Length: 197
Image 1: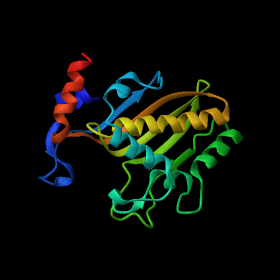
Image 2 (image 1 turned 180 degrees about the horizontal axis):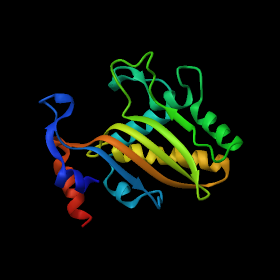
Image 3 (image 1 turned 90 degrees about the horizontal axis):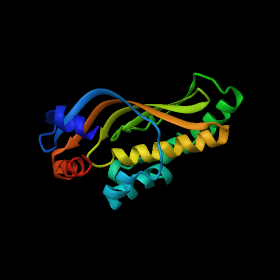
């Protein structure tokens, strides 16, 4: 994906903000398969601070100061609107009807979201060929900085759910409205691409 963005992405500005130049592909779909963790490329190139920040976002309940004090992904997934553990709900739904087409959850909290709309917006779980696949809609993913951690965290959720319903974890299928790399991260991205040729 990094190579595609760098080679074929359009030069534009994130949210139209001229202080945030990016290279962007829009309306993309891709599949992550044959997932093995830990991933050697991520292990080699991850930035500890950004990894830990996103990991906390997915694992700790509460508000996130850097996101206009909106709820963390953990809050949205495990304590949705202070009412519902969506991950447990998905697990129970799949236990009752293994092949259901409606094991779908959202990270939107439309009654309170104002300053920040989550980048990972909807997650759908579907058992196919005796493995649990995940279908994910993202409004935006920053592939120069945090997208790789999003994918690691999403896989950990896929593994958590698949373990509970006794099937193998499968593929992650993504639809991304804006896949981009900020100009500030281009040097880092180009180094990774040159190293893994």
